[in-house]
Length: 351
Image (cartoon, rainbow, N blue to C red; front, top):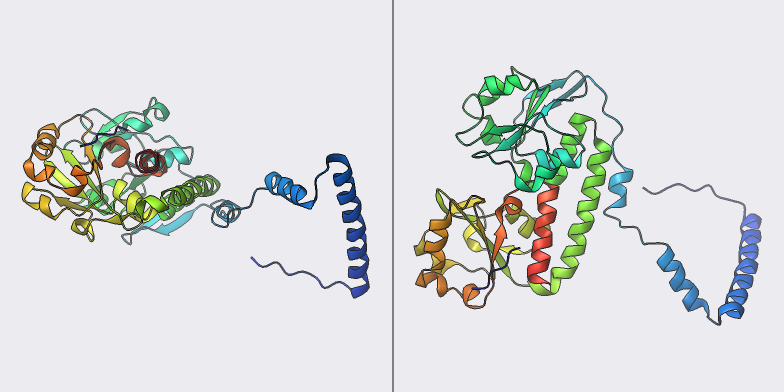
């Protein structure tokens, strides 16, 4: 096994004589310009066109409009409906935001939260250089109590998936501050980052962050295209509870939905599936990525898998197409994490 860390614009009609005059002038100027260029450098029109092409980058139809069409500044009071149908009212622009596991998106918008998600005393490691001074909020045993959240005095609470809102949590949190709930923010960055930008009055920042990310995705797809044609990929996650096949969420979302690498049939319609050794012969992936828990709590399961005879018989394993990856990025949910995953995939598949 090979290890690898790693709008059409309406134009006014001009009179015909004016057009003829304009064309005549342009032809004269163009003739002079070409003669001077040939005399000075000995080059013809081909070189002049090449230089012009280098000096004026071609606009990306998928990127530049995203910034240009950013919505106007949010007007408050703002009344919206979240993805579970709750009405959310913001009287003023929020300044103290608690959005656990959405710190990535907040950073892209230039916003520091009042508290950050953590597990066993660790926040999302890839964000810590930009979350200095932000208190850790423990999620090891579930969501924090209303008392813990109230102590942070948030003026907006954002829950990144519907699971977080269950068991009366939404009802409790919404009494503390306006609370917006996503179905699954990590599964649609274009939507979730845009919505977050609207709520916080950060539309321009949201549009810019998404445009830069979308450009990166398209460039990566072009580079990867010859390497992933007809190939499938699979992520296996290890933690203290066992081994799991990751589908179309987090790193799996990047592979399948962003980069266009086909998912394994085992997770074609699932976000996560528990893995047992008996399932190993069914693995059909050409590329397998192993994401062990940061604190190595899944180490025993990792060894159980990689030392088994069934594992060693998998074609991708025999071909050396198994790679250890950083779960801190591959299980993150935002532009920063997804950009890091793209960098990893490029380094692994198309070095």
